[in-house]
Amino acid sequence: MIVIKLGGSVITDKEKDSHFNKRITYRLAEEIASAGKKALIVHGAGSFGHPQAKRYRLNEGFVDKKRQVEGISLTHFSVRVLNLKVMEALRHAGIPAVSIPPFPFIDESFIEKAKVAVKDGLVPVTFGDVVLDGNVSIISGDILMEIFAREFEVERAIFVTNVDGIYEDPERKDSLIKECTVKELEKVFFKGNAGADVTSGMAGKVKSIKEIAYSGVEVDVINGRKPGRLKDAINGIVAGTRVRKNE
Ligand code: IP8
Image 1 (cartoon, rainbow, N blue to C red):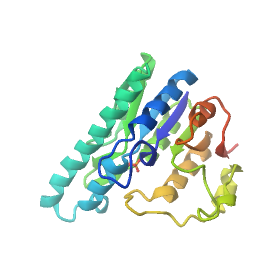
Image 2: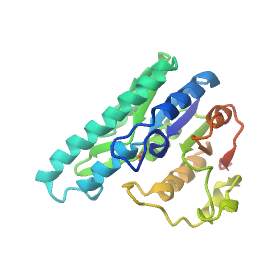
Image 3: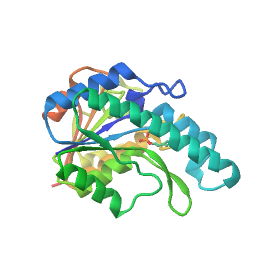
Image 4: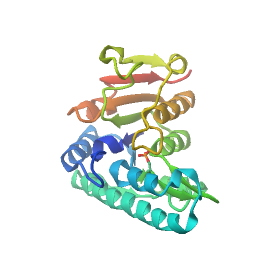
């Protein structure tokens, strides 16, 4: 089984509020379908969640509850709109996908629901969302990748992004890390590229990647804008960054 995250920066245009990259998402769905492996799918929120969550400061907890209630509803609505679009793409490619939203919170039943779906031959799809965990917060798709990698027998985790992989220095094109151990990744310092992102961009992602590799699952980071790379990665051929699992 493979766990795949379709990053918000690939399936949406982060520069424009609520803009879905339909052509790319449909192609990625075709690549997943044609690779023919069992999969669990997570997707990011991109411009369907980050600007909304930021506007209402949902990543800061309850700071102005009266106003934030509208923000919670809007953000959850927006990520669900995106989820439906992703579901359409997956179903168009012939993938028997079913949606399992994190809202209102993640507990054991979340994993149980995903397990039941997998057992019956369905492909669970979840996504970064707003959650009410006694307070208000944002759960990133990266954390959901950690949960899936831990709870299922996963062979590989693939992060589909809009860059070629993990760079030691994002400003230096020649610093792409092609393959490394999780221990080597520890030595790389990531500045983070927060921008419009409420879940810390690449720095947050690397934290999750390390967790997954430490839990014994190999992680690949690839560029989803380059046709064929996702299908190849599912089949074990990575053009990007491969983080070897901790053995
Ligand atoms: O794009 C963020 O999920 P991510 C979820 O996977 C929201 O980091 C609602 C901003």
